[in-house]
Length: 132
Ligand SMILES: [Zn+2]
Image: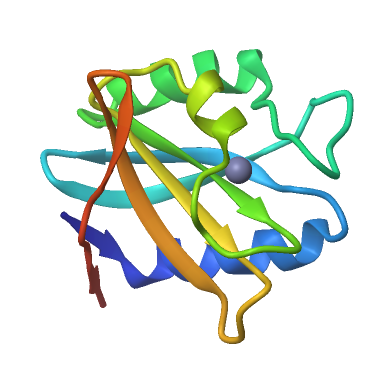
């Protein structure tokens, strides 16, 4: 798995800008490569503790990506006050098998980024290479 460095930078910048709330968004790419990030509004009722990607943004992003030969390959969100390991709620709410779930944890400095793939109802951590 490779992730463009610009994608990682934008995720961290979004996470910081959204403080004290969690931020969220969509990862776009193809094959084993994440090439773009789409920042979306966190429409959760309690955005300090949860995230919910705006469903309309998800649909629009999927359509727009497909039109350019890309696809939605995953999602990201932030943990403003902890590390990048997924919570029990993160797993319970993850509903796209095979897709990537990137988490940025802002408690460590520099921020910690971990990527998981949802497989058989569990998160499997996936190593990634930043690509400049
Ligand atoms: Zn989380």
